Length: 340
Image (cartoon, rainbow, N blue to C red; front, side, top):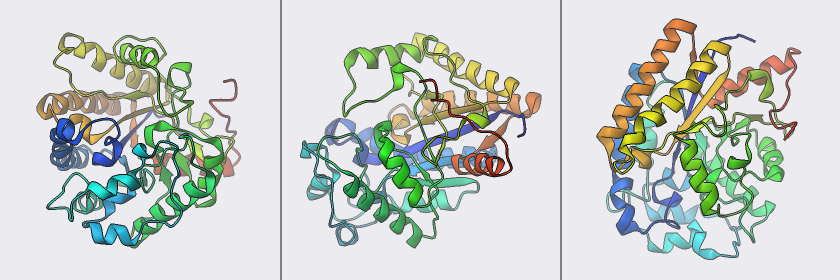
């Protein structure tokens, strides 16, 4: 394999389908509307700087109106013990079309992504499906994933990558995903702090993760490409760092956050490893100018690493295909989780 470092960027595009069970619409509407403004800005930056990125998109967003969405609802739906987290229940409260309700429909956004070079569209499941929620089962996940891939295919999109909502990884469903032709997924950092075992994460763990964004507690999480093959048949491209949005309250710590990411990127570039940065467009929705300025700093740093060390930009699909191809050619692949 080539020993050049690789930057992977993935974004979870979900609008209100990803947060309705966390924030009220009134409270978070500004972020969600801001996400629609942020996407074309990100696409323009990615195109001008030759950044390959993966967009994990909730299947509900492929529609432009409620009538068409309702026609495609799978007969088998997740029977969560807590139905308040079900997107299917939320459909009752949405508007009729994208113009009237821009936080629940996203066909226009998806078309922009499709029209931008080197942007991969992945699935974030059809309904923002929680694979670790109590009450759901494998048959329900299968119906959800099958519909997500079907809807994307109608748009001319061949989906090869899956990003699981809330990073909930269910080992049984990884094998299921492979049977649908997917080749890669985004795993979590290989550290106890980022291992997700249930629907909700405890406050203590979340606070330590917040601190880890500014101070190196868990490591830089850079990976060799020959260690990305998981035992489930899909290539595991784990996250290295979540790009938190600019925080005015923590503004004095913001330089530490950026330095934390850039140190990881630099290590990956020097050692020929992978650094995987991810976030949600709605994270940038409120303080757009400040968050974009921070992203510019990171992208400029990548350009420096590209010039100095030959670091490359990859989508998840591109990296997954490379790993699988090298495996077929006889290059050994281990698992970053084999000692976990």
